[in-house]
Length: 547
Image (cartoon, rainbow, N blue to C red):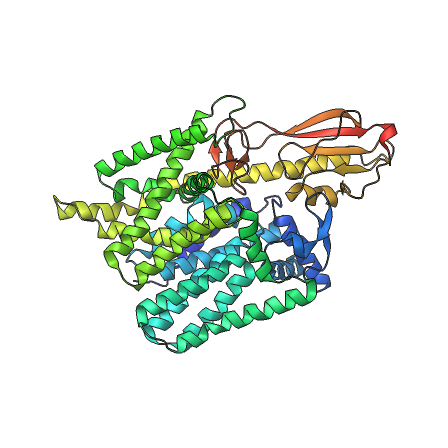
């Protein structure tokens, strides 16, 4: 059942949740997308035709970035209309986030009778909301994804070739926004085969995105000597490690990220499971805690982080419940719809956990709509042995778990917002303190810190080609990527600046084991605990080390 007025609710909730973070500092890979957008404004047909220093040396952008450029074109258009400020670009990215929420609502209407709750269960998650506060391609990819699935189902069910065509085009746009979107094609194929049981016009229409991607392969190979197929293959090569122990550890961390990024499933547990199953789930979480302790998934240099291990165990158990619900839904329904949801969830989990170069929340994001739908289907199917009224009351209660889910998700948004702001504040303070001197301010580290340092006049160190001047300044952040310290005989430490993020919750913190953007930082997407201030070391190059 779909009500066009009710469809406004998930979109409005999405905007209301994201508006408070519209001034968020540019963060993580935002910098790469913004650089590409600026290149597009100057040279629209040569989107990656420039060099960047992202790994400590200058490299072609086509080798650094692992995403296609459609989101960058959107940023270039938004900036041309409204400017390059944080607020302007974040407001522009409210549109794909709201469209994604709207698409989940209409898609959920094909699977269950509670599309509002299903769409909100997908939206009010840390994975969706935090990703939507960034200037990257992930939420836009999801918007193309859900609308492509919706239109494809419409076309298959009603034999509407126009819907099938537009679904195929959106599938191509999805893949041109993020390479993971390519996996949408076998998903649509599996649904159509299960539903139709024989070839039709839809078979030919699937050639549309394939043709568009083949054209993109030719363009990128002609321009940069490497096509998207090379980048997709590089994921598997860079991933490495096929030992059983390595795969088990990746699976455990993947479960932790799945449960943590879609924490809504945890709050729905009392409505989904019997008391016996809930007790078993607690036991499973405890088991994961001790497995995590034995595997040392959280650094224990300062003592065993039991709080982080408990959080990881709880998230991993929630991840297991999500996969179980997807499998159970297919086992009980065994139709095209349940197959679509099963492949959607498991395909995303396998890619995020075992194929992608790192496990991160952005890779888990694509499964959030399917999980929201599965949660509502499970509640609607719930059968109590004692009284039918109990079932009805459980269905009426389906809205209440969204409240704690929203609270946790917004707190994680705030933690990431405050952490991003430390880099902006640090860059401004550091460069301002040296603006009246003739010394060059060099820096290590990338992400948003690089964006703001370069905007303020700082220079990124190229370790293959750098010429320091007399008593130049070198800035090294404590919590960033691709940094290295200089020998003590080369530099003298001047001072250490501290900038405090959220002190109770972190999205990227080695000590707590939080690695929202890369599990290299830790096995949890976010972690509660005591968060130390971000530190920035200010060194002065010793005179004899100049040049």
